[in-house]
Every structure is written in structure tokens, then in C-alpha cells.
Image 1 (spheres, rainbow, N blue to C red):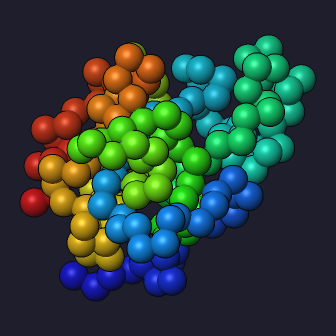
Image 2 (cartoon, rainbow, N blue to C red):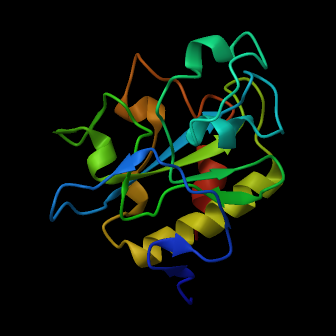
Length: 182
């Protein structure tokens, strides 16, 4: 397999640069992949709202839900929409602000050592075939480029922030996803 990640950007993705990132601690290995879900407004798909949130341009007047989140400074490394289109917001070697207060394998602050991928979706609706295909393709590229990420180090946001987060949610088919990686 040829690695399609160059200088920490997936060349076949749509690129929308988010200002919401920082440097990883020096020498910190990238060794966890965190899968999330997001929909803006909740339960609705499409539109520019996720890009706008990750780029600090969310119009708080566009929807009542946005009043509470417009000032958040968050991002993910990448997002896969309902059609399987991949958008990358932050270079994989940088620290995207996706995990919040979190821990994995005895280490706190998962943003320091993880890559965060959002799936456009919510806890109570199935993800699309196109999303599973795109996520599997992206994951194979990440496993190739960042060998510290292994199958047992691919987790959901709910795994690193239990009680606080539920995504990618009960509709995410972990068995289907893991089988697609082989």
C-alpha cells in the first residue's frame, strides 16, 4: 500500500485549515485514533456548520443551539460526511482539540497523543456505507503513517471520556469497521 499522507496531510482530502490546534509535547508519539460523531444542529446533516465551528465562524444567530457553542474553540483532525467525503482540518502531527478531558491507558490529555476523526452523525442513527468505506480507507493510511496506532488503540470518544461522552454511539458498528480494516 502506498502512503497517501504527505507532510501530515492526506492529499486526497478536502482541506479546511482550522486555527484550533497546538503543538504536541516534544517527543510525544501519535498512538491512538479516536472516533467521534458530530451533527450541527444536533440530528441534522449537511451544510457548512461543522466547518464553521472548527474555524471559529459559527453564526450564533443561525440556529438556537449555536448560541451555546459558537464560542467553543474545538477541532478534529478530520471529518467524514454522510457521503463519505473527507475533510481534514488539522495536520496529523499537530494537536487538534477534539478529546477534551480524557484518558487512555493510564495517560491523561488524549489530545497530546491521538488523532481525532469525526463522523457526521449522531448516537441514534446508523452511519452510511460511504462513511464506513472512507473511515476504513483513512484508518489504513493512518496505520501506515503512524505505526504506534494499532487495532487495539482505535477507540471511541466514549472510551476515553466515559460518563462525559457517548460518541460514536450505539449505532456505530465496531465489528463492521474493524472487519473492513483487514
